[in-house]
Image: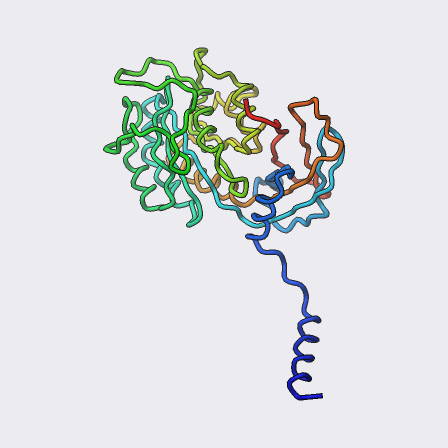
Length: 332
């Protein structure tokens, strides 16, 4: 036997003894992209103090659809890139608006090189967003130009008349637009969330699709879209809502901010001061990015049901799980 063959055999034997490499993040994303039948469920895990919990294994999770346990076919603890619509209330009390304006640019610091984001304002109508930005410096400049309680179009000196676009294609949100007139003193929260969800709907499943909603939670009765229809769009499009309220009353049970966040697997916080808001923005981006990802192929799904409930459990005590409560097979 030649020395070359002996050396080759030793290399192969050594390679065989090495432990297998863990799957890479890109492999998980490719799996999500390829397996269209998968239901993908991001899960946030917190301890009793509200801190994110790392190190939970695949076999510690259990997932149920319509009360029937499912086999976890995909698991990842890797961070996923974000697609973010920052949705900001343009009709806040003056003191709250000043705090939001002064702090909002810090959101850009929490975004990574693979993330993309845009910003929309809303009162009676949502504003026209600029294209998603993948440049943090550019997005930081956009946020520095945000001026609240002013008329549309425009974020400071940036015109917002081009209409929403996804992959350079114009998108219809189904929500009326404000054209050349002062906003009325009411605001349509559902229509604004609907418009933001429409922007995210076409983004690929291997990205975290997130609405960061900053508001006092007030809402008119004049929305084109109701809560149920808006929630169906979000759940069918895998969009999560993370809300920051500037009014404690908006966090009461039954408030729209908390309802959207709870149902979509997001979260809701109260920001009383500029320092609170800056801390919360960092927490939201961290929480949205660092989630466990569970995927399963539904077994014995009832084809007559449009909505399917999801429940996630973990085999550890004292932990809080945050995941969406269910999903729709199709958007409205």
